[in-house]
Length: 82
Image (cartoon, rainbow, N blue to C red):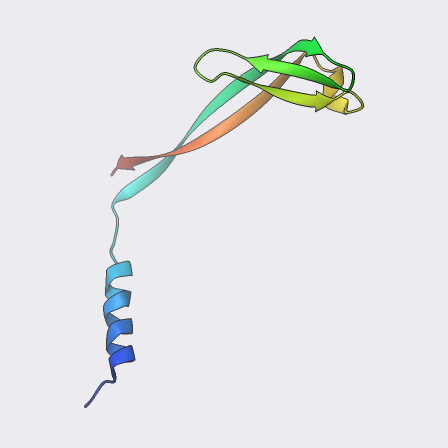
């Protein structure tokens, strides 16, 4: 039986991607609070400090602009050996 080159390469490629894994994904969540900081003509700045720091700018006509604190949740997948 002869196999043309493309079939052989495909078979080899499939073996590489067929590896089994013994890792479990576990979610770690982090909540970041952005606190109303400064108003400009068109926007309101909310700022976070701590482990994660930075600012987001919200248009004054947005529903978010009515809040004093905006909470953002970040999910991180962490690999844990089984």
